[in-house]
Length: 167
Length: 167
Image (cartoon, rainbow over all chains, first blue to last red; front, side):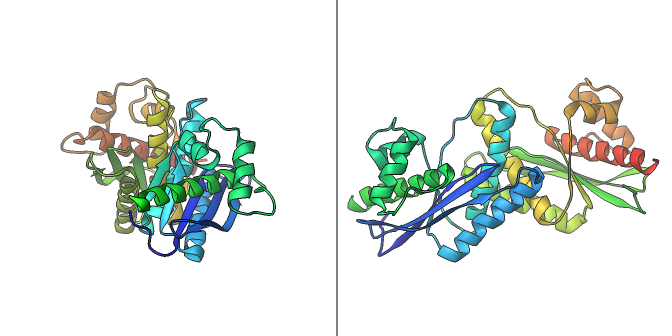
């Protein structure tokens, strides 16, 4: 992939309680922070309604920032089949919002994301958050863990782009 | 819930390889077959593309038949976390198609569906298929298992409606 001028990248960390998003842009060399936040879902909201809210929320961010790529963390989550299914539904709603807008979707393992952002594939979440603050010149670490994870996957994709564009 | 005149019900059995749908209508007493089929997804289609196809396919059936209710089987699927997550994504895409059209979503356990259609919550799939043929006056059993499962959950919801409307 050749990165031309500024490429806007959206990273998303979907969840049924809170879905984080992070937007960065890159010229193939530097990576710059654009925006980040969370789509919070009230615990009492019906599961079906939550899917609509995730889908609409992601859609709004896409329409505001016009990302060219959509990045998401691969999940291997086996604590409980019911939670895995619910997480899958939230991921489906988020991915669909991107796919229906024609955005290509990229997936990275947690290890790849951590390796990209901190140089250590087994880094702790706090180290990821700390390095994001440095790399993106943020005044403070992202508030929510989901926001931090979403920014991390966006930065990981930007770094991968940098590698690709150098090929 | 009071069933007025004819209520059209859509049942769906989502899957990442094949998503079945079944449409029935009920006046609160009789349940009549309207349509059924499958949205087949080529194995080589990208996972993200499959979500779009499920979403679009379900959306087309909704626009054609205007169901008032959307019914889906509850899943407790724990063979493998990766498959559960993928199934969750497919379910998310299907449920979202209904939710975004404003359709209320109802879930029934496999046991409830089998109990409704055959009188035995532990019935074999072939018995469900056989009973659907009788109940809906079909010339032959539905071709695909996913189509049969989708019709079964639609019929289950119709029978539940009958119970509710009698209250």
